[in-house]
Image 1 (cartoon, rainbow, N blue to C red):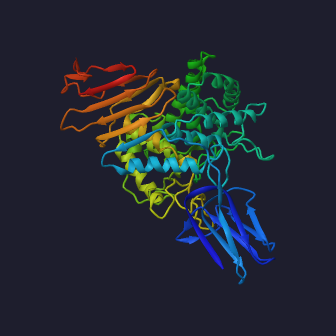
Image 2: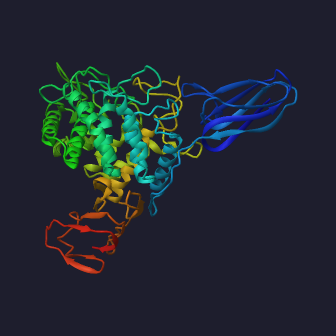
Image 3: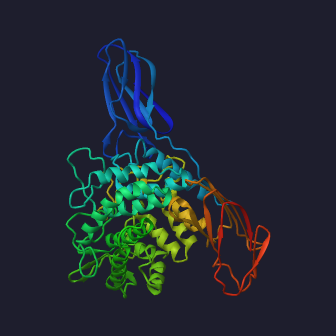
Amino acid sequence: MAIALRFGEIVNGNPRLSIEGEKGTKVDVLTAPYQIDGFFRHTVIHSNMRDQIILSGGLDQWESTYFKPARYLALVIHSQNPVKIVQVGSRKLEYPFERKGNIQADGVSWVGQYFDATDKTIRVCTTDAYTDNYRERRQYAQTGYYGAMGNHWIFGDTALQRRYLIQTAEDQEANGIMPAYAPLKSDDYMIILDSNLLWIRSLYQYYLFSGDRISTQKLMGSALKLMGLIHSFTDDLGLINNPPYPYWLDHSDLDRAGANFTLNAHYLGALQDFSQLLQWLDQGEASVYIERAQLLKSSLRTYFWNAEKGLFADALLEKGISNKFSEHTNGMALALHIADEAQGKSIVQKLLADEPNLFIKRESGMTIVTPALSYFLHKGIAQYGHVDASFDLLRRRFDHMLAPQHNGTLWEEWWLDGTGRSGKFDKRVTRSDAQTESAFMPALFAEFLLGVRPSIPGMKEMTLRIPQTEIKKIASLIPSPLGELSIQWDLNKNRKRRLNLEVPAGMEIKLDLNDVDTANRKSIEINGKKILLKENQKFQYQLPSGKWELAF
């Protein structure tokens, strides 16, 4: 006899059962977070979510000894004799998130849908800490970097990021290296070099959004030690070349020999972020790290470019550049401004080529990113002036995850019923349908659909530009340590374009209207006051706290 239950959503918790039946009766308690092709399977994501209890003949009350992600729960009773089920369900474990942010675009429903999907994804991957997914449940540093991109704009919670920054630093080794995840569950001191680099970037990100100078200063000693170690892995070109520790990058078939472009692009981001931290905190010689970043950027631009392909190669080897090309490498080249104008134009043309979604390799042979590194791909394309095309590509790849039969969360890979890690599709394993590394979309929405980004720690200053998108009417509520910032754009070209702002006390808006066509628009109105513009004038304006209405 079998009884199946379906919760309305994913529940992290301990299944519980109160039952009476004949002594010796075996009862299996099976759970699963999702279905594959409409079928319930308790053996998913490298786990067998099965418990078996043997009834005592009286009233038995049972609770699982470890928590599980479950949307489906089934009881399989190995008896033809009657049993009495008094209660069945699950104890729920959840982090006390409070939704503070929101975004809505008129007539463009997918923006809100992905915002909500990010919310759900972060919630089901978090109990007391960010974890990567409910397959591993590890607090990886690189996972938290991407997860915070969603959290900052939806919940405004910085405590989770502070937690993994501190716990990872507490397990730092004497030479400066940090573990990929913390706290350690055993003697498995896993090292992933790109995770170390994203710890640096996370520290910058944390200070920018939280303004927590005390915690940031305390962690700078660990950061200095780590950056010194990583520098020791570099060659005369400033490249990390054949490092002594492994790196991950993504679940994809990439060339990891010699000097890898994507790893070095992560290092470039870490150098840039770290030098800014030093300047903000008035610590040390930021110029040393700025010079290292300049050398590295120049080397990546010069030595990895394949003019015949019009792309950057995955790696620089002793024999020359690699014959492998990937969206990882070329997306990072755009996102970190490594590509010059001509290189960027060539890359974008190839990334936006009309090809079928094969999810492992493009028809051209270029390796496709998994969700884990999609942020840099879409940021890069948008940054080079193709905002709507970047989001069109994102939707072609992610939309199937939001189909009604699924949980409304963002997946670990492009499939639930297999993996493409080897470069070929392997259907022998299933993957998680919630992955914190896929929780980056609100950061893209903020930068490219709203035109906003923080520019001073604690979000005390926010830079705001006119978004370069076909979406004409969009509004958002943005949480910050100072309160909520309200932004409403109406960019309909058939009438005056308008911007309405409500700025919380302690925050300033650095309004960058350099994209205004001053040849055709002679003035801007700010709260009814007309400001004349000169042709080709660079226009910036500081708006303090309060309500503002602009028309131009």
